[in-house]
Length: 339
Image (cartoon, rainbow, N blue to C red):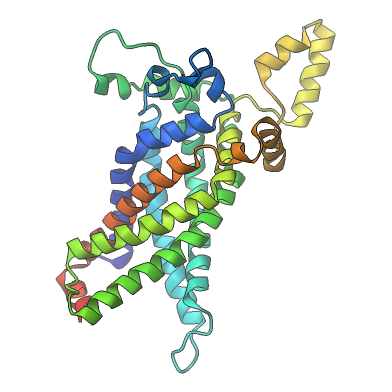
């Protein structure tokens, strides 16, 4: 089996494993960051979170993400490994010494991989976040698992979109969040991983086993991911708002046409606004809107939750990926690394 196939399989399996485990935390994060958080999930009369509503349907929209995340993650890791190897070769001098620091090589490689991955992932991310916000009725009968995985929720979210291009609304915001995130996370992750490995080799406790690889990677990735997650939370909040409004947004030209038609037909502009939603807003405009509503605090809403699930998700994700890649590479690769 080729190295690229090994990377693709390891990345896909890692994504599948993590999505199932941390998806409920992602749903909670989306709901905390939504503009309707106080209206839907907060009980003003009790000055407390409405837990019954907030924690209902935590797996809504998971199907679409699992289907898309596997190829998008496989594409990310394949692109990342290829770019990292290619950039390392190009930036090496005739003496074999790298002309560019490795953290920069890792950041550039992760940025290239992220642009590829985000293009594949955006439609599922938009659909997922809109599905996470649909208020489902209280279940009357059937198991919790059966209620959680009902396909109707995803289909209900999909019906909100009139054209396929709306599902790509938020690609720029997703890339704007993920590019700095991975640019910070991967250099920190690679540095921590190599530092821990070197420390264990120095002490004579390094074994190169799959369990050790998974544990070392999980600690390194989780630590790096949580730091990067907190720093990039404002961009994540903006991305969430843009994606949640994707189904109802129109371009400025479309909005003007709608207004003219409404005036001609004698239709109420208030009803038109409720039916169509707002005009398409830039990320900067959305950020200003959030600042006006809640100040700087609003841009960091869900930051601690995002850091927690990113630490868990990144640790599991990259831990499974690295150990899966080593396992698929066979015992020869593990023996070579332990020497």
